[in-house]
Length: 569
Image (cartoon, rainbow, N blue to C red; front, top):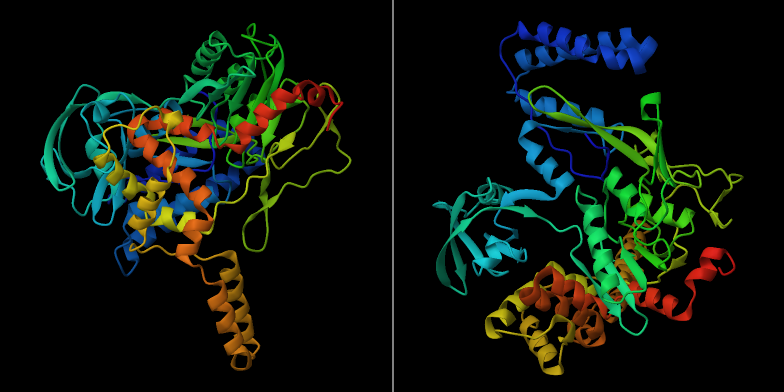
């Protein structure tokens, strides 16, 4: 099983239980035998302590299930115990029951059998939020905003999205019958499920013709990631790209070998990319590039943000340490832990943290120290040794811990609070659904704009809708009011506080005009996606993306080489 480097995930499990008391001792013995190999290697003198506590645990579990005053629901009780035990270590060590193996497969491969559509709840309804391009739902003419009424004869009213998703998924080649509703009109569809592969590279192309800048967006490090990036790199070079942006923003990681292979596309053979160091020597490993690169000379910029984690940090960190790419964006997530999956009984698995990884300069970028926690139980940040000096190949200083610090930061302004209110109320989604019903075509994604007439239409659409939001000023005023009440000055200051509240309270009409640029950006992307799907959404975002603009400006000024040479900061 390959080493995985996923970000935090929700821990789920399920446990079979039995009422036959004699099996408790059998299970204890089996568990002890099954653990013998690990104990011999890693536990050493803890062998007796482990065995003793296993017996204590099974006895306690048995007595609780027999004598507790209410029904203990053994499976749920065990889930609580396992979750608590694993969460005391780190968020990445997880138990994966047989029932969740398909979800785990999807995380590592990006594949599942289904109709190819995202769904979500809207009130009591379950609707399609986005069909995937060229998959069964899209080919059947199902649109974002369509309501799902029935799946194989079962009404979905009252079901949550997980329940509906399980009905829609199934083995590739099987059929599923749907009753959908659009604008009050019902329609029947019989879809043949396919093997759905979420693209690792949802978009690639030329983003600046004048400077011959190519762009590749990488969303995940599944089993096909390096092959997809290789193909995309060759494609944009054939289109004339002589400079490249590799976008890892929002990429939470995946398979270690794919990260190494992607670095190998840009650096020579036999170059150190990452080392792993664990508690046992089995996990002390070195990973080097194994083949000749596709292009070791093309000027390269890597985009990162706070959600670029794990395998993304190996790629961006290694390319930074090797002075092969300029990193632009925000400080990355800071996950320097490696997980390995172990098979357990009943077709279940344990994903366990086995090592930390170290990139070429020798630094580990793990942000949180889960072995040390504060009084509230939260992991503390890794203590950085001030005297530790880490340098890139050309001698540039780089930091250890707390993620990858970009060479150039992007100060992206925070979206206006009114945008969050509109988004939370689903008004961008609802307006785009209405717009799609009224407009058969919009032309190329990159050419679509929000005209004055279209924006007025959106303002008219939302003016009688309920959406709430508070400014930071209002949040600060609420905190101040609480403090004033505690200190018993409220009666004296009540009138002034109320006057200030009225002055600071968001005016929806004014904010819809004041923050039109922010609102237009989200609205444009939502409408474009209704016609051109994920590819169109990516194209629409290019024109206003401050990260991409900064990269293009850097290429245009010839600033990549001086930064990598250490002659420009």
